[in-house]
Length: 256
Image 1: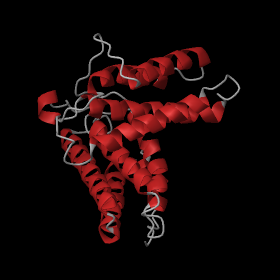
Image 2: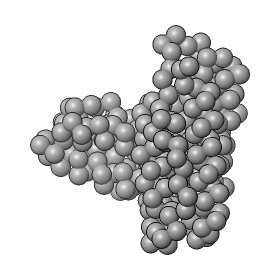
Image 3: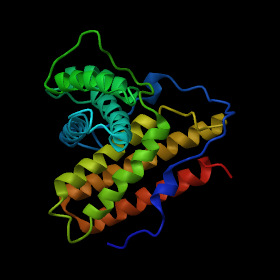
Image 4: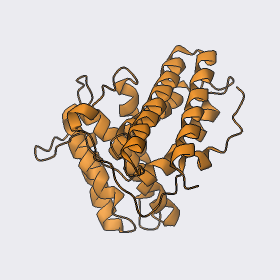
């Protein structure tokens, strides 16, 4: 597959003015969009398990929880929060759905635990209980911002880079499960980011932000479906759309 020459890291990390006029977010009902047509629940659940596994390794001991691990855990926890939100409000039922709000809360706690090993470990323990199916009646989820937008945008190029390598013609079949999960995660991040219009300076920009998030979600969903179908040409077209959505968003929301 022909690789894009666009440096993806630069496409999605936006530098925003400190003085923003925040657009009023639409109601939760107006914002809620069915995710099932874009990515299957099994791919999202697999990514939950993947990120929890990475956090478990990073928090295996205080010595393992070094600066690099702390940075990775923060990005992964915010990503897990986006996945948990989408799964909490997923428009089809599945066995672990009732535990997703508790997992979401644990992910949010971990995302702000920073370098505190004890707090991070406790938050991870809560996440793992929810991962195992523990339902917390006090935990809830609604269609609202649940993660740091800037952190999610830093995670996007990391995931996209892995996905781009995995959908190479030589690796497409061998890495299908991984690529399906990565494309599903990008779709979930786009869906969760749609709610947070804090990068927008005007109501018109807020509308544009939501359109760009939809474009990213749709492109990631197309890649996901193409990976499942093992259709390389369709995968390539979806990856091109994904890069185009990054370019368009970068052009609008970066500082001149």
